Image 1 (tube, helix red, strand yellow):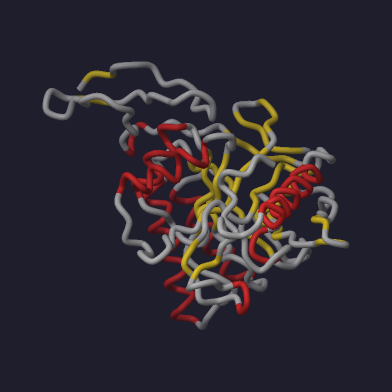
Image 2: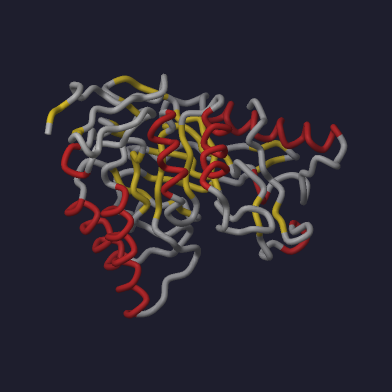
Amino acid sequence: MTREAALTDWDDGDIATFAHLVTGSTRARGGCQRPPDDQFQAVGADRRPGGFYLNGERMQIFGLNRHQLFPYTGMAMAARLQRRDAEILKHDRNMVRCAHYPPSPHFLDACDELGLMVWEESPGWQYVGGAAWQEQAVRDVAGMVTRDRSRPSVIVWGTRLNETADHPGLYARTRRIAGELDGSRQTSGAMAHRSAARWDEDVFAYNDYHARRGRARLLPPLPGVPYLISEAVGALSGRSAYRWIDTGAVLATQAFLHAQAHNGARSDAGYAGLLGWVGFDYASLNGGNRIWRALKTPGSSILSA
């Protein structure tokens, strides 16, 4: 084996080409390559009160969440369209949260190559079951980290399940297993309640859907913890649907709400940034009058907030 290039810091800017180990039978035939498990380049990201830092430089997180439930096809979508989602998101953003499960490897391949930072989380949403269920949750975290720990785009492991109540014993275990398998990334989990009393992750992430008089607003950052808005606007704010058949005024309302939320996140250095809800319309039957033809339609991937 020979090393073809020296490892350099991964960055969210230009398309990254990674150093890799090759033999005569496995030499790459063009394109960007992920390093193998024993030679991965960590992102070098850290969070601290006062913002997010990549390779020692402060960076404002500006991104969106992504559901992989494609309209009318669900998870069954070709690799080229998984990649296309990453290309659209990368257009003027620097991060995506994969909600609420590990995404297709094809999507992560594109994130690695394009320089799009990733929050990857274990499958779950608003529910924690009994002992057997919790054992499976721990296995899910272990499987997620083992599969994707060699990806430079992943900067956060979601070891606390989305919008769940406090379960200190369970989340101590999931965080510990993530650290044992990969100690180079921070852990988090999107919170629906804004309290650090029984919270024990590296990054405090809050789903902030507050609004006043039709305008999106954010609660101030919690003091003393790295603070990231993990969801805002999206499926719970403004009109019940945002469809391309709707009027320009309706679609402009969505754009204004996202702009207001991001403006709030940039108004105080205590915010590490904001991940809006959501990049693309997605299949769903949960949401009452916000469901249109088995879809939720808060997709905002082409908005310039």
